[in-house]
Length: 421
Length: 204
Image 1 (cartoon, rainbow over the protein chains, first blue to last red):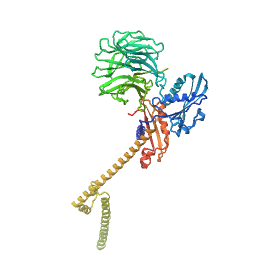
Image 2 (cartoon, rainbow over the protein chains, first blue to last red):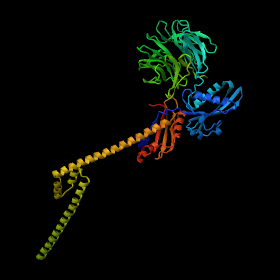
Image 3 (spheres, each protein chain N blue to C red):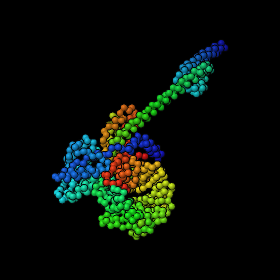
Image 4 (cartoon, rainbow over the protein chains, first blue to last red):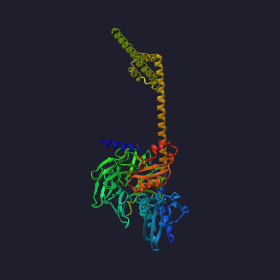
């Protein structure tokens, strides 16, 4: 037994003695991807591959190889040669061909290759109406993205925001995440605020001042019907739909002091969850719909707190900085994104719930209203350039920063939709 | 009869005397030479082994040798020994310092190579954006002294295929770790012949 123990000790020491080199940074470059024009008898082949390329490069997560640098244009697995892409230092290649195509219907077969590993990592096919090529290209983009990154793609998700072409013109708009297909949901000459998606993507809640005071509305996205929440207080704001779609958290000032309330969407009852004399506002649901983050100035400056809904137990989350606000959870519920301010400069930051440290991720200085992609990998936020509001974004690995297409007017308060199932 | 008895006694006495003289001469002569020869050798070999000197003198039985030795342990002799001792101390320190410097140099050399390898692999590793996952994949790398990667094997998976594949792709893109070229052979063998690379999703 003793000899065995001594042997084990020596074994452990010999293992310990081996050199270990840690690699944790990774390259600053994004992976290089080649989307080869899909073989087609109609012009749609090139336009589909072009749309996929636009999607995959939208947030700067991939660099695309220009078509004129490609050495070959394979469309099937059997005529694909890795060396043609190895020479070009390409990391991934997407090829495809049309199995069936006419003016009504298309069926596309596609392949994704990992060049470094000399490996086919995805083979799939998708079919649909010829007129829905944008939708088809988003489906392919999502699947390609998942095969490479392991994360669900968000190219078919939508974004809601407040567009204000002038001081007396306010619109609640919804567009695809790339800024296309913008639709105006509601417009008013009075301010509109705080759009929030229902998790079933059927409704949008927001605040309207159309009656001269802030009132919460829930609008059906298909019928356009609007419903306001009847409350006793005259000042209601910051509605947020719970992920389980059963409740709506909001802020009400029944006695002049804003507190966090929850509106039960089933029995239409309202419950009060904070009672402090300080201002409690900007609630945000945890992914399991059991907790809420909110901003409160109860300690003297705006800080983030976490409320357990069942017990009303409150825990302070942020300790550093003279301004921390507008927090929301990442999809894993362990990290949060927030607006972090110091001496009048406001950045977007991230923070682990269990750690004290706040990591600022944006470089612009007047950033507000961050919204996280459903896959937790991208943050879009509102910022300003010469008083003109626009939407900017970044990937959380810090490799990529981007701005969304400029609108005719100031853009504020983006709200990223949940996944489109 | 009496004469013959006296003659016998004389003869016995003479023989005994002769035997005694011969025996005593022999016993004195041989060990004297041996000990005289050995002592100076010990002084030369371990000049500063002062602690051992009294122990050795204890074994010397012969008085004359003891006196001889005592003469060598004069004050001047002791001074010389002290000087030698100091010289040896400084030599020893110097040797230690040289050894220490060599070790430091070796450590520095190895650390520089490690930093260069880290920089190189970081520059080619396209880390996936699994931003909230704290995972790691460990590989064992076997190198030739030329820096050629003889083999690499995944010994501990991260549990995320995409993450493991990204590290595999980075290693597949390099044939040589040239950063180890020029390193003294024994340091190469000790550190880089076979080492582990740990790819981490988060910088801790």
